[in-house]
Length: 222
Length: 83
Image (cartoon, rainbow over all chains, first blue to last red; front, side, top):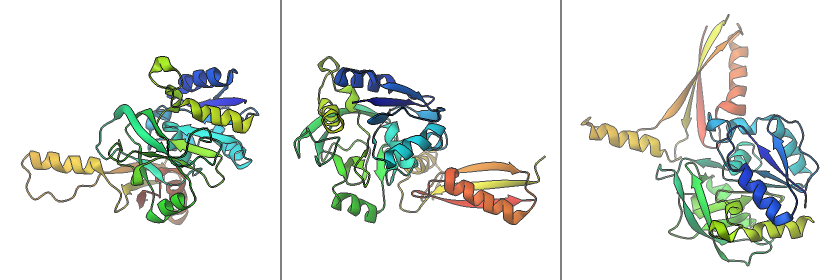
């Protein structure tokens, strides 16, 4: 599986994503700068966590207008898989590649801890190696992860099986609507999630619940 | 030289949680200000424009709001234009 990690000014999980991808796939991902006009021909594009453009205006707003995002959008429309983690999820909603928005955490605080989630959907390239309903633990680290969408959009996401990860009841770190932690686009080739699967791929880092996400992609895209 | 000055107010739509506004409200009450109701926080963006035609300027500003300045899923905007 060939992959690329997009780096925006003030991305800070690009290295984490690159290390996890290399460990899992055995191949170094391409590192693509935000001002580049094209992403190389790959199977997976990762938009990493961080604070792209210093979160100016709104998280992900400036990044969504960057030159590289035009090509990311075009490639996603052609079916290339796109994974947006944390700030990457915010970039995807600001780019309208995913519905809804990520707003300030309900408790106002930046939350940096492990959260328990359930895998709600496995009929897609990102989570096919998990069991349906499986409980997983991944770290979150964000101040704006409160998923918001109107009721109609939320109903549609649920009805179409596009809510992939949900915080376990009582462990919602940010007030997200319907405990939503991660969603798919309509074509099911774009996933955005607030927790960090790339940080739980190595037992030395305290967990391996993220591995199945990369194993799923390797199986689906190789 | 700018011909017009615009002020764009971007605020959260009704129904969108504004925890910052709430915290500000609590702080005001804590300072002893009485009768504080709901507090909502927004943004003010000032833009200088070289356009001299007010209608064209407004059309341009509306496009700026829709494309970048506001996220219309959660925010609404108002444009104030001075010649």
